Amino acid sequence: MSLSVIGRSLNQSATLKLNETAAILKAKGEPIIHLGGGEPKGKAPLDAITRAAAMLNSAEIRYSPPDGTVEAKQAVIRYTEEFYHIRPTPEQVMISVGAKQALFFAMQAILNPQDEILFPAPYWVSYMEMAKMIGAVGVPVLAEDGGFIPRVKDLALRVTSYTKAIIINSPNNPTGAYYPPEFIAEIVEFCEKKGLYLIMDDIYHRLLFDGKKPYSVYDFTKNYDNNSKIIVINSVSKLYAMTGLRVGWAIANQKVIEVMTNIQAHTNSAPSPILQAAAAGALNGIQSGVDSLRQTLENNRNVMYARLKAFEGIHVTKPDGTFYMFADFSAYEKSSTKLAHFLLEKVRVTVVPGVEFGREGFLRLSYNTTIKDITQGIERIKWALDPNSPNELYIGERKLVRDWV
Image 1 (cartoon, one colour):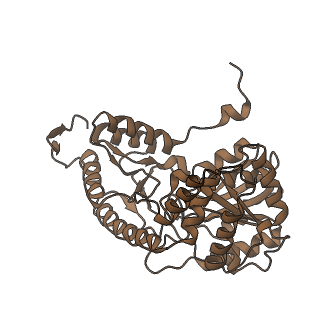
Image 2 (cartoon, one colour):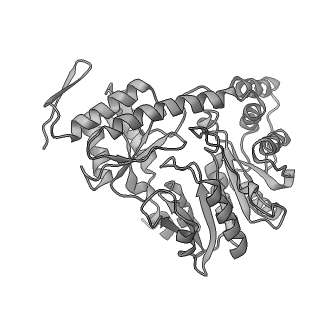
Image 3 (spheres, helix red, strand yellow):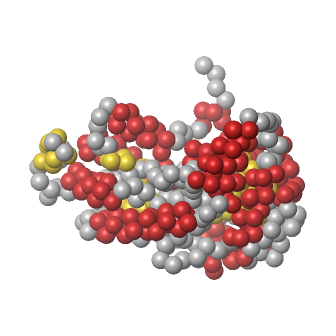
């Protein structure tokens, strides 16, 4: 069978594949503990449901403009003014089918084949594959000190004549690392000086712990008019527990938004107006649910971190935000893919291999679950890996026996 070069080059999403396998096992009655999830467990805000229901009840459901409905764009503009302290014009906003699509369309709008786009490593799994899909080159940049936050110097050393853009994601998936304001200020200045696009993947921007405050690229730029090369991506998925809604947005200069809108018009036309109404309801509605989610996640983080720190041989950095912890398990197994499959097979715990995020030997664990699942999940992992563990472990009435070395 003849397939395109780009099509053959793409890798399957490791997170989605493991989620699919775990779901199949769970449907068969297996006692799965899911520590690999990337979505909040709460319910969508009532304001979102009410607004979507009102549109459904009207029975007036038509095509949306390709850049989004007036209501959704106004909600994004108001939200941006409140949390980013700038007020974009409607022409600088596009509503998309999730943040993922907004990011992909932004790359299509600004990158040519062979252009390079840089991003700190570890990085979200789709950055590399999106670059491949448009013939561009994703360039992960590791911090020289081996940590999760590179210096601007580390990024500068990888800039070439082909470099067109840099992506920053803070707090970061998969590490939960928070890029301090000094770094954001410096990367904004660097990109403006070099004439590079700076894409801010901001979907976790309010999920910060320990009193940390989100800083926007707009806090440091000297220019956010129609000459700006800053693109901010966001969505309602993570903050409002609306991952299935698939509504996100991009804020950029008018020309970039025009091109992104043309791309959207020729692909999916536009997000559903019903879902855009729900997103507007969430953005304009009561925000206490976001604060409640953040507090729950901070508590869950503390529980998982304490248990992993007590796990001999595991090296883990305390996350500043998101709902992910990126832990070094290489003392037990160098191949994170092999280890992730081993844990799912032997003790029915789902995690995501770190190699997918650009760092081998690590696992990404999500604490966006119950305290019970966190404690039992880490207990199962420890039992599976620690050679000093007892030979047997009970999961409910099921007895597991260590039949491996």
